[in-house]
Length: 127
Image (cartoon, rainbow, N blue to C red; front, side, top):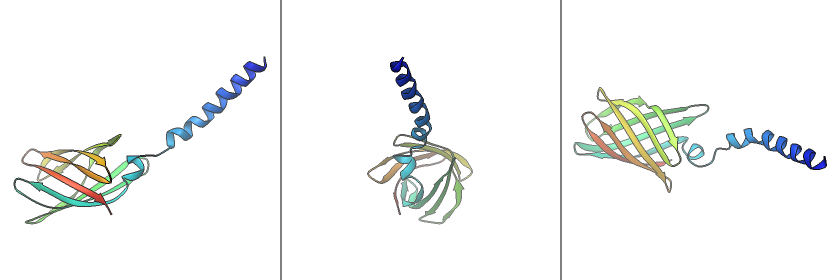
């Protein structure tokens, strides 16, 4: 009987602790929010890129780009997903749909954006 009571008490305490484990934000979910700055480069030129990343219950990401020739209007990212150190999102640039994939390693967010008309590589660091 004592063994059953001990087992039940242990099981209930583990169930009570489970919501806390689910809310533990380690890794990219903790490291990503903030302002990121860097550069991008394509066959057509390059420039500077900034990402403002916010995370409360959902992700909100704003991208600002300045090409070598002219500014590009700020864009909101959609479908922003974090899976371990891999991050993906979608955005619209130059009137076309784009998808981006990046990896967060050693404090650097590095990846590629592919659009209908152009693709470019980027590298950003948190400021």
